[in-house]
Length: 480
Ligand SMILES: Cc1cc2nc3c(=O)[nH]c(=O)nc-3n(C[C@H](O)[C@H](O)[C@H](O)COP(=O)(O)OP(=O)(O)OC[C@H]3O[C@@H](n4cnc5c(N)ncnc54)[C@H](O)[C@@H]3O)c2cc1C
Image (cartoon, rainbow, N blue to C red):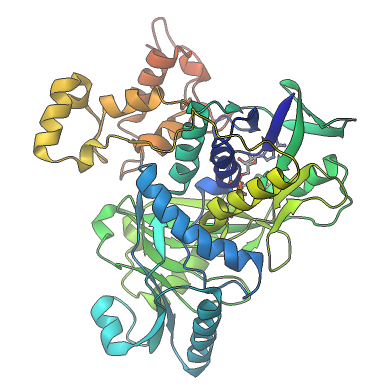
């Protein structure tokens, strides 16, 4: 029997897997998709929020502020792309100024460091492209940007190296309380564990019901749509720029990404679970609201649109901890924004509660707390030369837009949670993230997956199962 089964390989599930890998335990994470970080974790604003939004006294406030500091440390330890660039909430009139003062008050109560209100002159010096109608802003220097999927993947890789297990394409269909522990039924068979943790994102209400909890929460999927602008636009803003928050959320932001692009979005509307489509209406809303704050956003430089689904449980706090009705079953549910920022702190809390419920806490001698990734683009000329000398595959550029070498892709394919789709490789080392969106390097990456993982080309998806790139040979000797 396992000690813990975690359901869901998003940033929450992977953060918990990493946290538990500190201890000598049998831990399994099951994920229904063909990769981890494939749900909400891969489709959000990627902001490490400072923590002035959540209501003081909530767990959300505590997790956000703690998580913000933990992510900064994790990014150093696990070599995750992260930048502490600060955030601005801008105001246009007296009502906005009142909202900003309220945020300052809440942030101060939540323990957010360095918050201050900035007036126009200093503000325009910081952000010359802001609308001249802006009157003031709340500046939060501790806010940052991160590669959200890398935060999950890096933690999962270390956990697996330290002995944890991950089962992909493993859909949980039933959960049964046994005399001792639980049986989790999946398309890949039954797994038994003393404890079960539900980190299933927009499906967390369904998993809770499977475990026998009465319907104490239900999830509404709330879609948010975005534009990603080419790196040519990277000088547009230097910090994360938000309007004042409203009932719909934190509003349409304009922000740099860690990959050197500009992200613009999101909107917010009820949507179907599993539907990641964008809409003309949603994107129009984003456009209109973004130019109010930064009038010179160049939407002609857009290289990609996408949408993500918030898991909204209709309350002001996350649902985190052991079920009162079903002891031994834990929820990490209703994790809407700032869930990405909070995930490492939520993981620590749940690990603490699991130990309090009887989970062993003997240290794991095989724990892996550090990771290093080689990024050719970031190397100095001397480092590049040395890398090519050591491994000639670093001398072949596969993705021209992002300057990604064959060596980096092959390294990614050998990591502890190997990528099996084009987008899974993209999430690990960025081929296909640039202006041509994989038009040039896609077939080459497919060949490398085929060669190094021994998969048939037809079995290699663009992203999730069913997203075929090639379906078979059109003529003899067609697919190489
Ligand atoms: C538009 C938008 C913008 C956001 N912006 C930010 C931001 O800037 N900063 C921030 O801090 N937060 C932000 N968030 C919130 C943040 O993205 C989420 O809180 C976080 O990603 C949630 O992670 P998770 O692990 O709970 O869920 P997910 O990443 O969705 O992971 C859940 C996993 O469970 C799997 N699963 C579901 N059902 C089953 C099953 N039956 N069997 C097996 N596996 C299953 C899914 O496939 C999925 O991989 C934003 C969210 C959205 C949608």
